Length: 293
Image 1 (cartoon, rainbow, N blue to C red):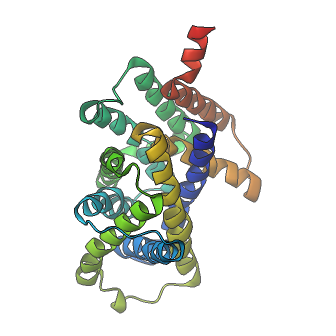
Image 2 (cartoon, rainbow, N blue to C red):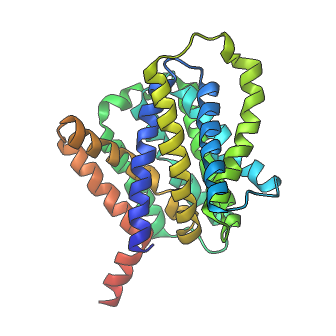
């Protein structure tokens, strides 16, 4: 990964780190499927307008984008949002951080150029350990409760892993086209479910906080986030792009410290150090540098 890739990855972690916060607010007043549809539909509309304005052609083949929309949007968003109605956002973030673990395994069997090695496996283990340490023992006490919600978040992580591998086929295509295509497809998949199951027209109108959270979720965490996601995926591969799941808790703590005056505890520093070690091990360049020196 180049320096530009790392900067893009950190930016993406900030955008996606905020998604757990925005989603927690939104699902407090709206059903999870409705939140998922609002997220993808608003983002799809924005990207369609942007594509028209910039002259980027929208997808003319539906099959691959339906698969990508299911694996990367419709299924994981629905699972995570439902899970967040039963468990804390921090615990959901811990479970989401298992995505690279599953991605490394899937990539090993499904690709020819992202095979599992000792350094990569050790890096993933270190990174996941850092996330657990950083979020602290209080959240881990709830691991025995709401098992279905936790399994749902793990299912979302597995879905993201398969999406990262499947998304390799879109290399060479404009990120805007890929992002818009998958969001359009996932909107079409979720809309009938919301109409039949949630019947949002019968719900009490959400408040300003819920609307604001949903709009932020769609514009920042989704529309802009996926433009960056597909850029990194095309340049650095599935395993590297999903390292963002390690950085999401880091960005959340830093934002809280800078904007809300929250103090960093020692476990946060230890966790971030472990994550840095994990990222370095997976990237592989520090080891190559030591061998060559």
